[in-house]
Image (cartoon, rainbow, N blue to C red; front, top):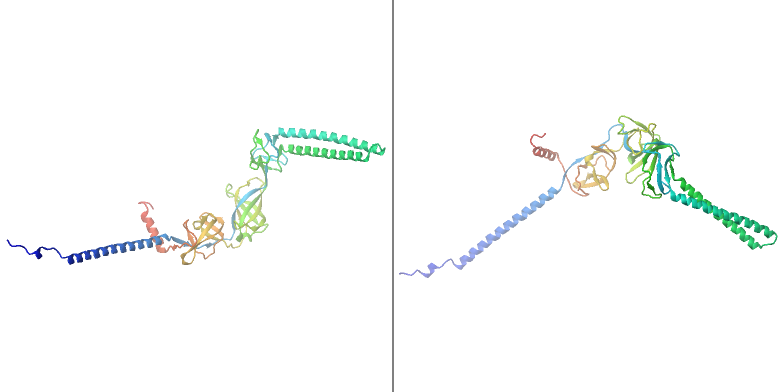
Length: 404
């Protein structure tokens, strides 16, 4: 049998295998590089999309001028002409109370009577001390008089006579001090009877029979509150921009929610004459007669000032106001689509819209419904008509079937 040649049974040569391995390595590197580049490109696209999505799309509005005759309507707080909180000036127990909330009382009328047993004993002791001091004074007076007559007969020395006169003066001072103490306790004892300081109406009562009353307790409630409501004071915070339109003697009308259709006449009496830095407003006081007691202390009223002339206040929808810890603000769109927060002063809240007296100008571009997280310097994208149409179309498609 013939043998096969040796060169015919050998496999691929070493050179061939090396070239094959090198080709496979190049292909593998190319695949890895292509995958890495694809991943990097996808990551970059994702970052771009995320950055683009982080910029909110907002609608922009402009403040509108107030239309109408320029009449001024502001909220006011109604207060009593005079109001006094009645506290106890001495410790004791409530023996009786003679007036309740809503009762009309006259000046000096007794509201309650207190029992003060400790004070009774102090007053009795003070009177006894005064009697002792008075007796010592009388004895010193007679002694000084006797020594003075003996001095005229040269029976005693001048030194002894002066000593008796000085003792009489000291005993007189002690008697006067004891009398002052008695009068002080008598005045304090008079505070066991609580009385009304002026004619009015009892608007609060916390006195209860048998209750302990401690004088000088700052945290305690007043036993009574008496309010004089024959006239009322109405306090209104007028925005600085409108403060020059009001003067003493101007007339106004009050409307209250519990009296629909009824108007109460009032007159501007005085102004604080300064602008409060917190509110940017001037405090104005009005007076209104209250013959039937319809106006109540602490009530809220709408004050319609009878003034004419245009006002520089502007109106904005309520949705454009951003309330922060520092107060109401609006978000104003500036150059490069960056925003700035401007603090404002709201002259009147009309529900869907607000009257702004300070903080905006007619040409300002105001962001409507700004996000709560928006801050100074943030960039925004202004909503276009096409964006608004897409939003409306999306909302229509997402609505449940049959809803309109």
